[in-house]
Structure formats: C-alpha cells, structure tokens
Image (cartoon, rainbow, N blue to C red; front, side, top):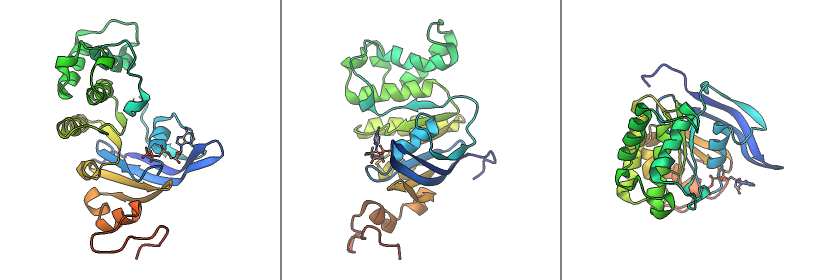
Length: 247
Ligand SMILES: Nc1ncnc2c1ncn2[C@@H]1O[C@H](COP(=O)(O)OP(=O)(O)OP(=O)(O)O)[C@@H](O)[C@H]1O
C-alpha cells in the first residue's frame, strides 16, 4: 500500500446488546484513504461493527485506534430513515453541511457548491426540489449517500448503501465512493454484494461475530472461503459443513 499514514485498527473488540455478545474479539485493519468492504452472512455482525466504529454502539472490551478528531459521516440503512420527513432531496443533502455550519447558520456559496456536486455525483440533481417521501426508495437511498458525501468527513461509514438498487444506481454509488477515497476519505461500507466487495480495496469478512478473513478482496474472496462463510457448496464440491475447520 503506497499510503504510509496508519489506518484505523479495531483491536480485540467485543460488543453486544444487553447480555448477548454479537462481536467477539474482532481485530481488523481499516486502511487509510481506501474503500473497505465489511461483508458476511446475515447476522454476522457487520452493522454492529460499523456502529462500534461510528461510536454509536459501545464496545464492551477492546479498542479502536486511529480515529481522527473529526466525527465520521454515517449513512444508515435506508430502512432506518423515515420517508415521511417533510423535507426535500436538496435539504436532505444540505443537512450534510451541518457538521460544518450548525443547523441554523446560512449555507455559504461553498456549501451550496458542495451540495450541487453531491446531487450531481449521485445523479439526483433533477430531483432536488422533490420531497424525500415522493421519490423512489433507490433515489432516496442516493440522497442519503449524497448527504454522507456532503459532510466531507475524513471517515465515511455506510451501511449497505447500494442494497436494492439497480445496476446503474449501484455503479453511481461505487464511483462516488471511489471519488471520495481519491479526495482523501477513508470509506467503510457494509455490503452483501460480493461484486461490490471485489470492487473495494480491502475487505473484512465476518462470520458469527468474528473475523474470518481480511485483506485484498481478490485474495480473500476465493471460492472455498465464500463457501465456508455462507455455508453454500463450492461448484463441483459438496457444501462445507458449518464449524468444520478449513483444510
Ligand atoms: N438492537 C439490537 N438488539 C438486539 N440484538 C440485535 C440488535 N441489532 C442487532 N442485533 C443482533 O446482533 C446480531 C448481529 O446483527 P447485525 O445487524 O450487526 O448483523 P449484520 O451482519 O449487519 O446482519 P444483516 O446482514 O442481516 O444486516 C444479530 O444476531 C442481530 O439479531
């Protein structure tokens, strides 16, 4: 990796909900100024790990090293955002500037330029004056990603930003995340999509609250690892059995 700046280190982090532990001694590297995909089967703990990094789910043990002084931008799953909010698409994206301005301060010309750029980057400029509740789910999702980008944070965390989107919307989001990376942002996205994980610079594969593998997606995501993680058969071979040690 050409970048010598240290990334974020998740060190032996455990976390859960009440007495239930859903992350168990997770140790992972998040390289600086790269796109990292967190992937794994349903319930593996992906969102929980993202929330621990975001600081919204406390770790019961372990530490996160290398977080900068500025708060991260966090883009929630679409399902967590009400579509009944009486707010336009533009105002939704403009909220991303609050981190810089506070909610009641007037937007500057520079803020408006950032908002316009983010709307354009996600292909939703023509929807800017529509109510958030009056655009499609996929368009709303893009507005949330645009809001995250508009924060211009050092660390951008996204929980399944492309879930349920069509091919062209997915590729807009992939391009936008790579653009943010190229401008110096560290991007972490939760995904179910193996293709999106392959597009990332780095991946962390979780299963049952533990890191199963991490590193370069082309190396990590081989057919045997995928088969073991999701408990599905490798083509031409019987399914790997749950809990069976590799090899
Ligand atoms: N608020 C909560 N209260 C109690 N348990 C929770 C809560 N949120 C998640 N869990 C549990 O924690 C575990 C990990 O959930 P998490 O959402 O982190 O997994 P995930 O890998 O993101 O799953 P998915 O792919 O289904 O979105 C699951 O067993 C889930 O049921």
